[in-house]
Image (tube, rainbow, N blue to C red; front, side, top):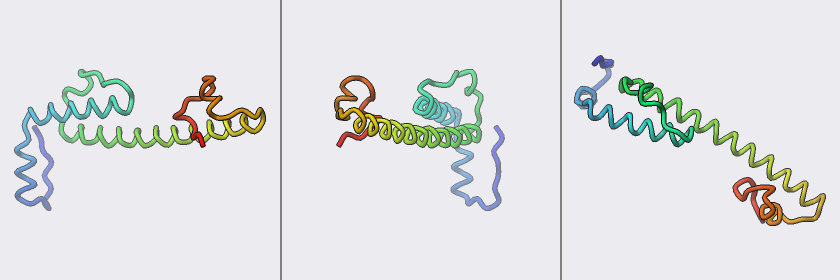
Length: 114
């Protein structure tokens, strides 16, 4: 295995890097798989990640975290649109937001019910 060396590392940091084992790498892959499932709803194909190095695992986590934030922002924008649409329907037809949810027009996560 190739490890990157940084001249500013102290002794403890160097020992920590060099003491990582294959068991640690496989455990990290399990965490990566969990993270992938949280973001995309499914686990990655084992064949696509089984040979990842510690550095690749770290980079994959960074990318998954970035995608998670993008998805959360998109979800917030969607919920804002649904809230606006529900407000329009309430004003136009005189129904309540609870009715819209009960009738299946919206789900409770999409809107705030006063």
